[in-house]
Image 1 (cartoon, rainbow, N blue to C red):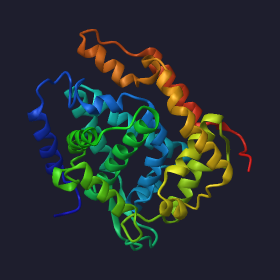
Image 2: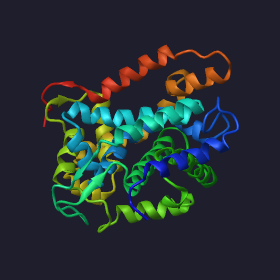
Image 3: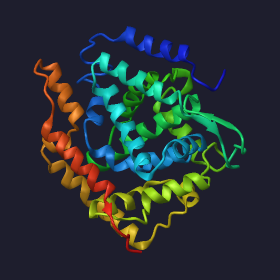
Image 4: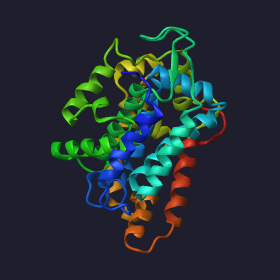
Length: 322
């Protein structure tokens, strides 16, 4: 099979899901799904940096972002748009989800080029495209893996049957990027085996110079002074990376980072669980609930909190202390 998801394959994939939707107002999932239970929380944001770095570890993704992001801010914006599009697909009504999927597809039409270095199994001159089904499947996998990890760090451990349900439901959202069920593992257990193969030496994942430079900008931004939240999240991000990937990015897990990460692991969950739901739930979920209740309205407070969190993580210009 051709590695590229064609326009016809994309439309067939989303068409099959569209035909299976019982309530278009609820969209792909709805209040009774484990997807809404997990994705409504801010907790998965804890692992957003880890997901971004694991995506960069795929040479196709790294070159696509490097070649089509003109600045560090535009690179950060790309990762932010990934989450925004996922929320539109997860919490939007069917029309909104379809619109978001087709918008992403249209953007991806312009993202293609050549690998400009020998990295992992790829050679300089190999062609990449944002429609590559294996790269799309890996991006999807990093988001699901990170959401589960963040939820368990902050909320509670998930039972294996809940993880199985979450993965099974995720195959539906994957279709909105043209990913067929046969392109991804069939169960949570198979997903874990796939993830570990990807983490292992010799897999398609390989951190080249471009990925390493962008990864260093995300974790050790020389032109920023991280806020406390920024330092804590960055330390946790380095801690949560697989050792091989961390080493290839050139990250040093210093004693100070180990201490900060341990403090986050030890205290964040207890603090987070005491927070009112109003502060824990993402605006897209709150707005989806109001839509289903027949009183659609924007979550103005939640959007303000979201902007503050985003600003805190991105930090402010300064010189980082070494």
